[in-house]
Every structure is written in structure tokens, then in C-alpha cells.
Image (spheres, rainbow, N blue to C red):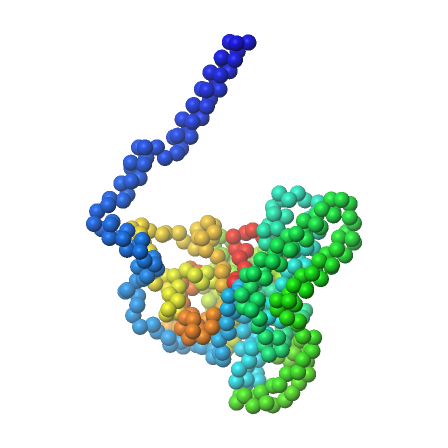
Length: 467
């Protein structure tokens, strides 16, 4: 027995030291560290760079002086807008953008001096519907373990204030619209994080309760009745934060001079039919430029909707040049579009310019950043993060785009008079989604929408709600 113990101890020790040695080969050894340290020489140039970077904003140091010439703000094709909106400290860019596309049509039709829909009204119903989507999905997946990928994703994302164009269509078609004066903004609508945290926490609690009751043998009908009671709590929390959504109201229509023309009585649905776009679902198509996926195919992203009974984000993936052609056709016809991109990349917010040459990070850091668009998506380094309203393009003599302009929702003092201007090269690299009216879409592209969509999971790299 004693010899066996000694042998076991010897073998264990040998395995331990063998494992340790293997780990040492993979770790940073003294030899490796000596080699690594050589990348920083500590000479006068290195010290100057270190002192500058340690004590300053990297963006200011990387600002490309060669690119600071006067910014060209002329556009050969431009749809005029009236009034920059402001989403404040919220993730509602998708909502502001979708409503601004409709708003432009209403302004053109009625000649309004100014006009804005109530974003908080639509947001209220969006949050209630998303809560139902989460709770019902928890019921649907009640037999799956918490470690299941879908269940895990649901509990990580019970609710958000971000979204996509499909959310605008889903909510507006069901609940209608009201003018801004019928339901004005609140502190919680303009600063959504606190409310969102509380709602998400409560929904996760409710989700666990539903799963526990299902495990204890509760039938589907009982679970759905419990869900309805839970939504009552959510509704009350929304009212306390956002106000009571009106069911009817009086609207005073004004002319181009701002003078009253007519006093009207409306419900949200009747107001939508009069001043909105009833073709939100049937008349628009959603396009994507995602080089990680096969082009000229239709895709659908699971759970990428705002209502349980709504429509997932379904799009045709196209080369960027195809998308540009439709965007130009729409702008030539004075029609704005829902547009989304990775707005934080190479944005000079002081000038309101999106240009890949704005910052020279490579020279500052003494290296290169060489990933292309496909590689950035694959590594979660880039994705659609913000929605705006595409409203202008500048074409050269051959009809090719030089630059583009969007109406943003960050207020009048942001960017270039509330707008952002982007070079065509930036458009290529960081534009992802565009929603256009069907009449600007070639027949060959329309036919692709008739395909059975390839269904992608909710955690796909391209599932990113614009905010």
C-alpha cells in the first residue's frame, strides 16, 4: 500500500509539472516578454507619443489636419425638411426616424409651417408590446432549460428602447398616431435608462415566476392569465413614467403661416389615417448591405420585432451599389428614407461629418487597422447602431454619388445644423440598412422578397437595434 501511495504521488506530481510546463509554453515567458518589450523603445519619439496620448483625448490627437478643409455643404438633390427633432438621452432614433419619414409627407401634403408626431405616444405602446413579446416568449419556451440559447437570449434582452423600422410599422398600424401636443414628452421618455432598468428587472422577475409555475404544473391558460395580470403592472409603470395615452383628442390644423385653419376631433387611428401613411407595411421594403451573407437573398431575424403578433425584420441583402441606385431614385422624387448605419465610426461631431479620413489612428498608434466591412461585422466590431432620415445626395457629372446627408434626431445644435454629412466612401463602409418605397425598387429585387426567408437567430451579429 505504501509503495502504491508513493507511486501515485509521483505520477500525480509528474502530471502536474507536465501540465504546468505546457501552460508555461502557452503563457508569456521571460523570453517572450523580453521580445514584446522591444516594441516600445523609450526613445524621444516614443516618449513624446506616450506623453501626448496619456494626457489628451485620442480623437483630438488623431484628428487629420489634412482633412479639415472647408466642408462642402452643397447637394445637387435635396429634400427639404422642417424642424430637427431631438430624442434626448434615449434610444428612440428608430422611432424618430420612422415618424420623420411620415412627417415629411404630411408637411408636403398640407404645407405645414411645422409639424411633429408624439414620439412618446408610440413609445408607450412599443414598450407594452415588447413586454408582452418577452413574457409570451417565456411561456413558449417554458419547457426548455435556462441554459438554452433562446431562453438565455430572452432573459438578457427582455426589453429595450431601441428598434427598427418594422417596429414603427407594427406599432403605428395598430395604435395609430397623435400630434406631439396631444401627448408631450416626459423626463422618463427623454431619459429612458432608469425606467428601462426597472421595467427590465420586473420583467425578468415575472419571467422566472412564469417558468416556476409552468414547472409546478400550471396549464397554458393559467399562465397566459397570469401574463395579463403582469402586463397590468407594466402598464401602470408606463403610465407613471410616460403619461396616459389619449384615446381621443382635439387637433387644430394650421396653415403654412401658422394660422388656425380647422379644429378637428380625432382618435389616434383616425389621425393616422388622415396625417400618416397607411401603406407602412405594404408599400415599403427593407434592404441590407451585409457582406457576411450571400447577396440577392431574403433573410429574417428571429425575435427582431416589436409585437408578438408583428413582423420580424425581413430584408433583402444587396451590394451597396444596388442600394445606392434605389436611394438616389427616391431622393430624385423628393422622398426621404429610413436609413441606419454605424454612426460612431469616424464621426467628427463638431463638423457633423462622417468621413473615414477624419481620424488617423494608425499614425498615432504606429500600426494599422486593416479589417474590411465583412471582417468588422464578423468580429462584432461594427453594426447598425443608429437610424436617421436620408434626405440628400450630391452627384457628379456622371451621376455617381460624392456625398450624402441625413436629418438626425439629436437636436438643432448637433452636427451640421442638426444634420450629418457623409462621404460616399464612408457610406460604403458603415451604411447597413435602408427602407425604401416599393416603387423605387427594381422588379428583380421585388421578386427576391417572395423567397422563403433564411431565418437567422436573434444573436446574429446583424441583430442590432438602432438607438
